[in-house]
Length: 543
Image 1 (tube, rainbow, N blue to C red):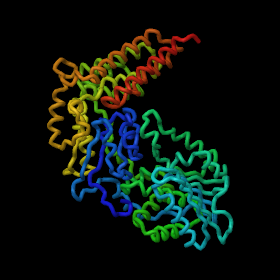
Image 2: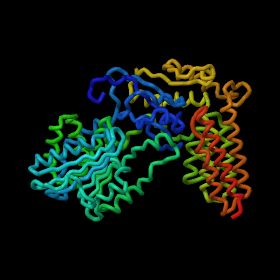
Image 3: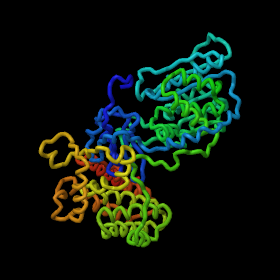
Image 4: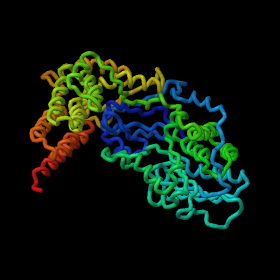
């Protein structure tokens, strides 16, 4: 496919973020780094990184109803911020810092993203400028997704020294992947107070993060602090290059050239801009887009306030724009909550009303008020219960999955990205058919929206004797978990002291472990119950 000899399947995979549980099962089944974890208001979810997806569809084997396969409408191009690129016709000032005549450029990134090609382009630019270049690419066994390091030595005359940059000898440190850029081995190439770092701060998950929901991406400020210990903090540049590349060009492959543009504008590269542009043309691949990407990177540094994607949202995101009707506002106001707790309630109370009804949401609010009264203003426990009691009460049964698939945000995202006439199929594996021996998901087209609509109208049956889905093992368990959680938190409130407060918050947050559907969820519930038992046992042990 990379050589253009094999056709790329027309069908694409899309995830409804609202339905997704972030369990990681699709990552385990596919072992694919294009299954991206993303942090949302409702915890970790999963999205398909469209521009790196190889479309082998193994992610569909994940036990989850959030997947939709789509064939874009003929001739449709996704709406994006590409139109704003025309604003780049204006003059961009030359770097304020005069680039040196020579220097050592060290680059780190991951395989399959063009790190080696970028090194070749910069080496060619050095030759165009009349300088000499020695380069080395250390790819090891990496292909797509593995670590890559590239060395580039630029000098005024020929040199017979090693083409590998020694420890502490880097002048410009270009980081295409912030995780690989903060390893001990790579940072050892830098010199504090001398090396200028130009860093793409984009969060690219590792394979372990894809398949293990409990592994979070390291905090950005910690990674930045680590980088600045080895470089020149007041001259370093940070930018979310992948966000810009995907938003402006529809592909993450332009991210490296955006970062190079930022490095040039920061005065970190011993090259002229004209030489870099000439080298891009000589490379002959996506010339116009790479030239524009280079200009985008320059503009990010020249005009730090410039953000062409300020109003562009992530495709498929579960948008949080709570508009409280009179009923929801009355329930939220009754708590007297303010600050973060009120924000949480303003989002979750309307969701619970839509999930079931006003009485169901009032039940939730009443319990939150009980927690607020017991903790007497501290706040962390109430916030934890607000998050995770909601998670338990809004369990995704057949009625809720139907509602979430019909939400206008999701349907609009499909239309915007693939066109109004796109052919879509909801990829489902109904438990009934699974019990009858069906091992694969079935694809149901837009016609099944009528079935979803009917299911949403039957939500009043939820939990009653007429709820045919409610007799399933996992549904009974979901209802039990709600009551067990309330009993557990009530017991903690009865004995709440400053010494036991942190433990109570920990217990309140443990339902974050409960993710997934069917067998995946059952396994995670077992883990959750074991974690609760361990934490409760620890509190009874003598000090």
